[in-house]
Image 1 (tube, rainbow, N blue to C red):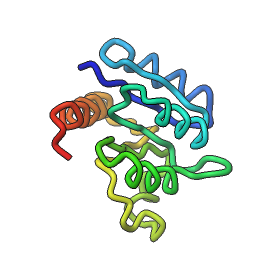
Image 2 (tube, rainbow, N blue to C red):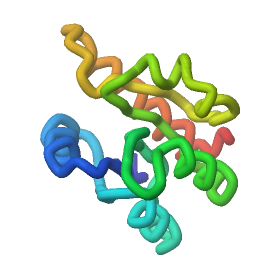
Image 3 (spheres, helix red, strand yellow):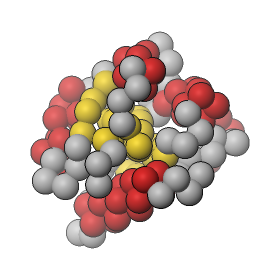
Image 4 (cartoon, rainbow, N blue to C red):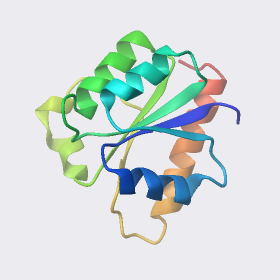
Length: 131
């Protein structure tokens, strides 16, 4: 897979942990917030999947996802959050139209496998241009 994964999270330790967990099979770039993520996307690199936190200063992941969906409809978007009920219960997530959501702190033994499968599926869909 040649497309990159863009991780957007304002917490440095989360970005670092994500890289450590997935660098063996993903080409990962990171952004410390929505503004930095939009600049990276605008630069024309080969990002296929954006994994974004919801709670971030200035612009949250919901607003970022809406902008990405409007400006880059071919990109795949995965929300990652430490509060997974936010995505399913929040009126702010209505109409978000993301491709998946993952729990940052899922303790289940198969959590990493599920995250890997979701990201790989999104990358394949992006590369096959199945928008």
